[in-house]
Length: 413
Ligand code: GLV
Ligand code: MN
Ligand code: MN
Image 1 (cartoon, helix red, strand yellow):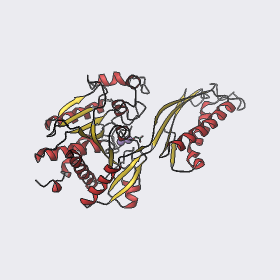
Image 2 (image 1 turned 30 degrees about the vertical axis):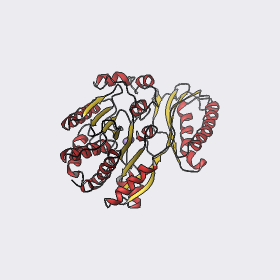
Image 3 (image 1 turned 45 degrees about the vertical axis):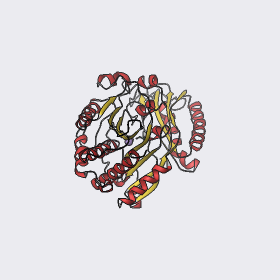
Image 4 (image 1 turned 30 degrees about the horizontal axis):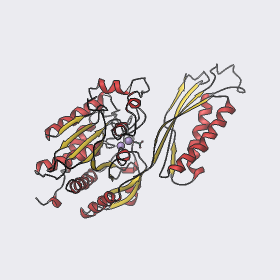
């Protein structure tokens, strides 16, 4: 068969995505499939069943990462790996992560039904807990696998209800026996929705990011003094929530103060005791800072940290700050990035060289092997929300680019 004319089955890809979207479906058309939840387990069970149908060699490691290997002709050659994640945000979308896993599965199904052999093995992967929404930080499965996060630390992470990561992994029966640890990979591809507005605005179909922003996550804990809101005068209060409010606005203003290409967000907050007639005495909130420029992001944090200190002192609210996670910016392999753009052109799809503000497992994989990503447009630039959407024909186009990128890498000697 002429490999150049090979294409994925767009309808079958749509079918797999629709089947997966039923697991954890939310009333407004999204999915909620938090890491290591019952829904995550059901998605994993279905995924493993589909891998078995292709006779892939299945490995589940002790972080719950799932790998399916399709052998190559030459057993001495390292594999090409492709995949993403199946966990979602709370009230998340039907495409984030799952598109990269189902897109890879579709590429493998196309090779399988056409009896196409490759020189190198091809491995499909589902990484555990990419989102970091239930258990912070994000990209935990790939982080431990690549040696960038400590296994014990990851296993001890707690969700908001005090459930331990490792206990939950055991509960859903996805703690494998093989210790998570890297093996040689020839190339890693991750196919994903863009999650932003650029491709749609530019009228392009395929994005080839040059890399991923640096990400910094912090957890801020404030203490105040609880009291009855009626009799307690305004002067002399130690209101932890008011201190947090001032700090949150400092974060929101940070990118403008700093200039350059960066974003900063407070997305999560807990206020205690959270009663309308008690002055809050305990607040926890998160900070997320991202930029292509690591130093710029760090300088921004140092600046805002001084503001936090001043606010905490002035309001008499002791502060504790934890740096939960830091990932440096990740410039992808130039050869593979250009391969993505070339394949897009050959297949008749318009392409765009861009950058990823969203975090992906590709960030950690990029540290151990040549890595690139393929983006397709997000309608309205919306993601991490129930209305997250991508046209089916764009899903198919991206999967065709992925198929040919995998094929080219898997036939390299
Ligand atoms: C992951 O989805 C992130 O960008 O935070
Ligand atoms: Mn994702
Ligand atoms: Mn996400």
